[in-house]
Amino acid sequence: MKVTEELLNEMKEKDENFSDGLILPDGDYIRIPKGHLHGMMALLPQTEDEIWKMIPEEDSPLFWLIEKTGCVLTDYNNSIGMKMTPAQQQVFDAMRKHGFLTDDYYDLTRQREKVRKEREQKEQQEKM
Image 1 (cartoon, rainbow, N blue to C red):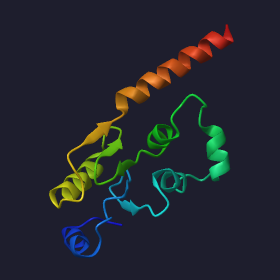
Image 2 (cartoon, one colour):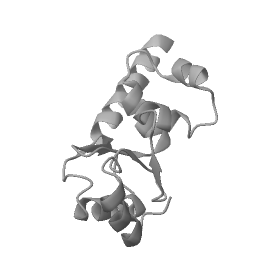
Image 3 (tube, rainbow, N blue to C red):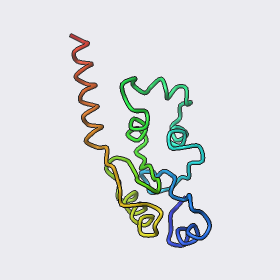
Image 4 (cartoon, rainbow, N blue to C red):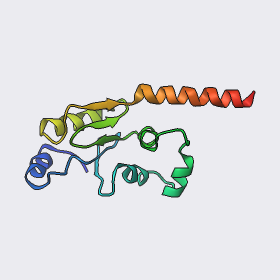
């Protein structure tokens, strides 16, 4: 769904849980009735069983899915994602301005770069 001023004003009146969702890279917002993990898995073409097999054992499924989908996870208390696209930043700022989200944003970009480098080094060592 597209987040507009009208929608945000309407949700202030109707829905106190509007903050639980995903902001897609293009700025669309998705509500998540079954939780963030299931919400992101539903965006991928694979089944949940196939996705679980793709996630490295030593990795965080949540962080892996954030990187894979490019989503920003929103929750009233805090939000988490990687470097936001301009469209994501615009939606995040609007939701913050209307009181659905706090300023707390955890950017995983550096953490994911570190994990990727460690995985590459491990793969290099295994080839030797």
